[in-house]
Length: 216
Image 1 (cartoon, rainbow, N blue to C red):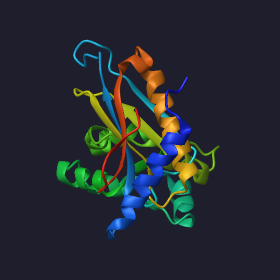
Image 2 (cartoon, rainbow, N blue to C red):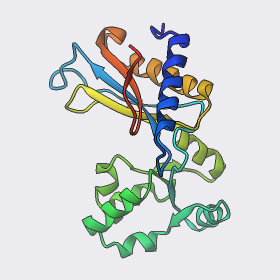
Image 3 (cartoon, rainbow, N blue to C red):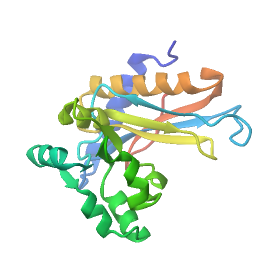
């Protein structure tokens, strides 16, 4: 059961969007959901991790790179996606700086099912450390569907601090699209918590450069 009222959340969304127009930015502001937890000990309690597919793509300029076999590389080129072959990865020679640069260049990676096990051997732990280990893609599924799923998926991962932040949209989205994404994200996060709503200290929504609005 969600403790957030749709009407008040829509008012908060309207405020965020209004503030974003007060000063012209040279980029599209992301809308973030910030979560503060309570009654949670990161050292003792089990750290949670989970992904949820939102109804609408939260980032407009989401960059994906396909690490593919020959068939997948052809498909990626047809879809206009950046792609890398095994030979391209070998050229990086496990150089930490180059792997880090590759990881920073993209929001996510997709890799052919047949290559997924080779990636740690080819690149070392760099992509994993950046939280961007590739999603597997088989030849039975459509690449465009997998790309859409990856674009709409957000990850909640508990680390050593009691604060989390995830992108749930951007300021040019329709109000009801932001509403749907925020509600889905909040309800999924609460389902991951041991004591559900009792573990939530506060929920705040803000645009990249905007003022925070507390919604719980």
